Length: 287
Length: 305
Image (cartoon, rainbow over all chains, first blue to last red; front, side, top):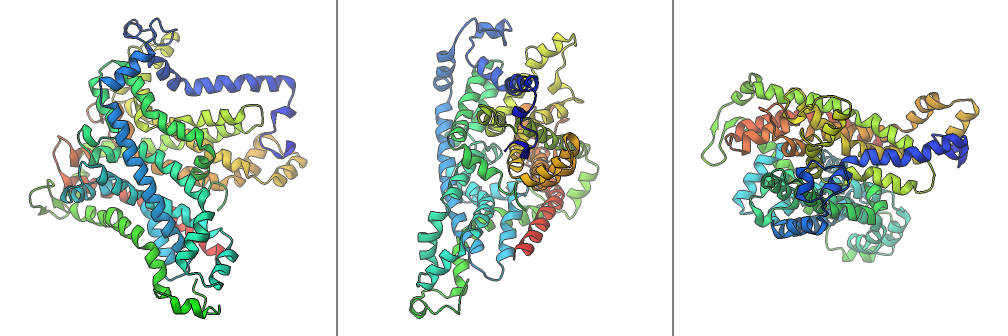
């Protein structure tokens, strides 16, 4: 690569610049992550440290096990985590499934109204949640879906289908058309083409969307507060908020709870980084 | 893609559904869900905004009364003003993200891990980021307090100060947003045409000139997406406000999205009509940006046909 990169690679710079960069990188990282590092450190402190204002020194009391155990034994955190999982996973399956079907119609087939339907999904994807809030809540109440995970999942599937269809359609448009035409000549119908040719080819898109939607839904807070009330169906984001109200000034527990709630998406991100970034940056390089 | 030219008589005879219906069968489940949960609610919200309704008892038609009330509602005006602060403040995420991306666009040992770690704030929930920053601002022991004390500045309670509170929350909101813009630019930088850079280098371009004249124009797609997600993100701000201040002190950190929620669904009264009127205003503001995005996609589609 060499000269072809911007900014100029540091390997080509003077020795002093190279060292400066090597030093600046970790320092920059620590500064950038300082708020998160602080929370991680607080989550292992004992109450004495906090009472003495020892937020940044070496912990005088190490309460790693105690704090994390307290989060699970004294609060419904386990329940909240399970609820989040039970909301996120079905949403991923539903939204990705629906968008594979819709993406096939919009990306592969040609018909009148194609672009109009596509714009319906793209435009809907950007609307503010508040314009949906009152009718969706009212609708859920009437169907007995209010305060149930099913109700939350159904809404999430519907809304995420907008983004997922946008993504799938663009991905499918770039599939080699010859494969599809060849299958058609051999007499395959659309369902067979969809199942046997298109679906295997869009596996990377399915992976990218799954990782991304899982994270979005796991981190959703607004709909969890609008459609859920009470611990039974509450996901971890809303749960953490309600616990924060009960744990006044017990920062070691708030911190441990925050870390626990953040771990699943962080873990998924590190395991499936390439897919996650591919999903997020769709369109950042072309168009 | 119905292909009347392709000779496939056997397949034609076995067709269960007419060709014209095929795309709509594939679309049906997605369209149905989207209509029920997105399209119809938008129309219903606009309809409800002309009524006085508590969500339970029969509603009363009030015409434009809700909208007229907005005009002289000081809380609405504060929320609107805060939305502008959010919008302008949030836009800083775009240059900040570009700066971080340029800083990290190197090929030294461990840089991939570095990039992932810098991206970290975007992956965690806004609720967690909100809690982290509440603690960061904690006036008696937060990181900010210690930092200011070191420089001899007296303590400030950012989240309890009507003048500072919105800026404090915007800063917290910027934290994940900068990470998002950074990753968009890193991807963009990856696909900058190397020949262009080489040609510009040969002509003696470097540093700022190179960035401004050669690299930034190449990064236009990334900049466009960064702007779209940042503007829409700023107008959607809700989570952080709910977590960090609950709109306070005295409603001074509310934005439209939060004020709407408060009016429609909280102890301040179930005023669904007034709430949906606020939501409609927010939606119309957003529609300006949505139209920009759709117009751009439309132009691309026309070109690629």
